Image 1 (cartoon, rainbow, N blue to C red):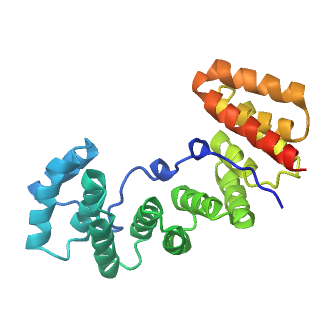
Image 2: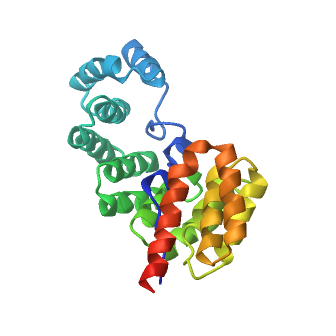
Length: 251
């Protein structure tokens, strides 16, 4: 079976669906001024300013799962210290083992650090704890795609489409799980374009599919539209075109 060979810029990040880094489920509104200040700083993207405050809070109370969770995110944001972030998330999970958001955050951290299989284990747990979360399921689908587990990525994206049927990104992502020998990808890309007519990447992907099937005119029309919408797509189009040429040269 042949899968679409995509470059890195084709990938879609779904972490933002979850609304940011997690606070533990059931956590009470804190009256601690320091924690409130740290939250405000992280919400403003001032992770470096929040880090020493969080260090102090955890020193006072090593079982503060909210502070541990925020510090993990800060460790990664400030210095990409994935090991320190992993330790904090793991400590928080030991204290709150039924908190799906923590497994999701640790799983995404592991994915960013390059450990996709460990990431998948955490995301499986997050989804099992909260099956209705679009964020957790989308992150798992993304990791499965990266692992080239296309059949399960397809199932996740199909489930996501049932949950959010008007999200063009989901149809684009599911389209990328189809075998290149299957024309059904065209339906998904066309649906993505229907829902979001200015979706340049969907035109690129549909154009690539047309090109793969030898439909040169249709492919060029989609590529031209993509470039009008977003001139930076030229590199992606050149990449896809060269890939098809190389494939045909080997036949």
